[in-house]
Image 1 (cartoon, rainbow, N blue to C red):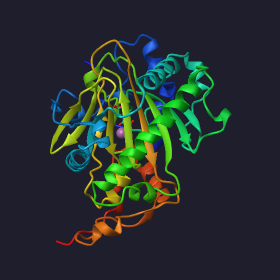
Image 2: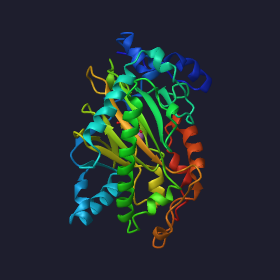
Image 3: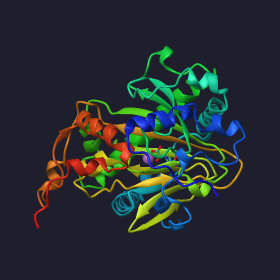
Amino acid sequence: MAAAAVEVKDPEDNRMRNSKYVKGVQCLVETGITQIPDAYIQPPHLRLSVTKFESSNEIPVIDLAGLEDDRRSGVLEEIRNASERWGFFQVINHGVPVPVIERMMDVSRRFHELPTEEKMEHHSVDPSRSYRFQTSFNAEKQKVLEWRDSLVQRCYPPPEDDKWLKNPSDYRDAAMDYSRELRKLLKLLLAAMSEGLNLSSDTLEKCLGEEFTQMFLVNYYPPCPNPDLVLGVNSHSDPGGLTVLFQDEIGGLQVFNEGNWFEVKPLANAFVINVADQLEVLSNGIYKSVDHRAIRRIGDVARISVATFCNPTREAKIGPIAELTKMNPPLYKEYLFSDFLHHFFSMYYDGKACLDNFKLPTKP
Ligand code: OGA
Ligand code: NI
């Protein structure tokens, strides 16, 4: 039995305690640990042994091929219902070629398996960097560390050639192809989700600013000696517009819905789509940005997921779309996306929902 999680109150204590873990979880695992350090131990109420979860067949799987034929209106309705009820769904026949996905997963794995010194050359917690290696969300500031390492890469607006990671040598080509294909899928989804709100198909994309930005996060979850004491990703909602995630076959992504956690079952070659905070605001609460987390299962193979985030430009003014506030009062304020990000980065460490700051008081 591992020791109880240590209470850390002072941010400076946090930094001192966590500075030895900034090299990442994979580095820690390579030292051959048999017990996890206290910094990774979740408080008792968040441990897997006490939080129930269900493996769910209910999170909708939607066949996008139907958008091209007479099934279109039915598919639009499925997307709307899923976004309203779950904030999550999976898509198949999404148009992204399988070899493009496979190559992306392959370079992702090879990056995370590089020697620690090589990855640490790219280590940074500065979100303005084109690409960087990090562990947890921000290992120095977080109270309880997450069992994951990540590679973060901005991919739209297209970075110059030297603003992509150079090792693995085939990374840039793979990541560029992947990002280009994902942009097409994002546009298709934004159009479908606009129509689902009875708005013209370009509405949501236009609300995200001149051209929405795009970045990805390659999450790497190494095997863990005490999986029931850790989380791969702490519970959070995504701050951007829409997230498209590819996960390998290991699984561990869970979605919160009406008091329970539901697992998003890995489905070969499918993407997991989730509504993020800005689409909840724009849709005036019709689409839900819900809490999700990732657990680390028992097993000796690392799990990989690639999360692509479609975000408004920093200057975009976000607020409920006017057509949607005619019948129902606006639930959120208007704000600049840069203000939202500012709040998000100062709150994530405490696991607080950023969106709450932008809600309007509802009349009793
Ligand atoms: C994320 C995320 C879940 C996963 O990166 O925002 O929620 O399954 N990832 O990796
Ligand atoms: Ni997320």
